Structures are given as C-alpha cells and as structure tokens.
Amino acid sequence: MKVKRIIQKILFYLSSFIPLYLLLFIQNLQIRDQSGKFLAPKELFSQFFQTSIPVSFFWLGLLILSLLSLFGVFLFFLVYTKTEGRIGEIKDTEFVREDTLGYIVTYIVPLITMDIHSPRSLAINIILFIIIGTFYVRNDQLFMNPLYNVFGYNVFSAEDQIYITKINKSKLKIIAKRNLPVKKVNLVGDIYILTEHQQRRDNPDDLYG
Image (cartoon, rainbow, N blue to C red; front, side):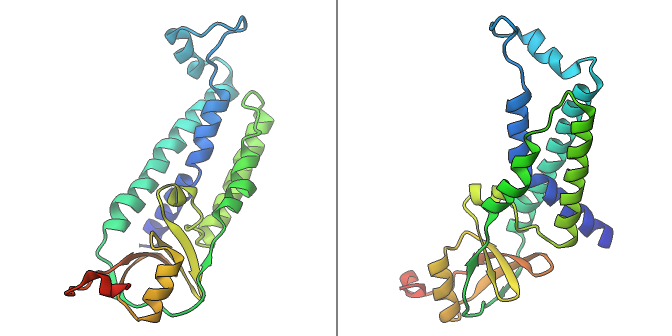
C-alpha cells in the first residue's frame, strides 16, 4: 500500500510539470532550416532521432515523462474526482488560497533554460528535477499543480487541511458557517478534493440563499 501511494505521488508530481514539457517541446522543436524555410515533414520528424546523444536523450526523456504524467492526470480527474468519498462538514475558519503561481516561477521556469545539446546542462537539470521531486513527494505537495487551476479548481488551506475544489471562497465560507454537508475525497494525508453535496429541498436556493 505504501509503495502504491509513493507511485501515485510520483505520478502527481510528474503531471504538475506538464506545462514545462509543453514549453520545452515548443522551445526546442525546429520548424525551419538554416535558410529560414519550413522543414519538410520527413526532416521535421527526423530531428527526434539525431545522432547527438544529448539531444536524443532529451527527446526520449521528454516523451517518457509526458506519457507518465498522463497517468497522474488520469488519477486525479478520472479516478479521485469520481470517487464517492465521504459526506461531512468543514470548519468555519479562514480559507487561504495557496500560491500555485509561485510553484511555476520557482520550479518550472528555471528548467526551461536547459541546453539540450550540453550533457552537463542536462545532468544538472535532471538532478534538480529529482531534488524537487523528492521534496514534493516527501512533503505531500500534491496540491501544487498548475493543471488544477487551468481546469477551474481552487486550492485552499484551512487550519490543518488543504482543499482542492471548484467551490469559490465566498461559498466555502457560507457552507462552513451553516454547517452544510460536502463530499470529501482524501487525496493523500490532509489533502482533500472537496465538492458540494446537494441535499433534497423544496427550494434549491435555500442551500446558499
């Protein structure tokens, strides 16, 4: 069970770097030759199989990381968000929005500067990637993922718990103040995916009116 959890955390970590994979692909893909003409499809495709070991290693690594990260996306959006979870309440407290933009600036942006033709640059960035991953996994930083924001999720910390939810802050405070039920799915540790639990009432607006 512990090994399974660690694998899941690693997949979540890899998925948090999907913006980086996309930026690296765009940055290093050659679409023109030295004369400025657009490359033919054959030439465009052949650059992924260059004889240069660092370049070939880069494209192979980028492909593997991108494919593995899709499993992390699948786990969150198609497994955990669809899990039944448990019905409960949340405390009436201050909900602090977590700064996922800081994650991009601190960890993703520096990795864009790598030189794919330099073995030293690749080695340094691989070590940095592993160090960040170790911190991410050991400290359960699974909520630090730009994809959640892209797909409309907010990340809030409230006392000793962290909520990943599409519910906005003002509605969360109403839910907490009125002790309304919510569905909580445990992602890992004290991190939960939070969704509304609609009770049957004569007037649906009574829930938040």
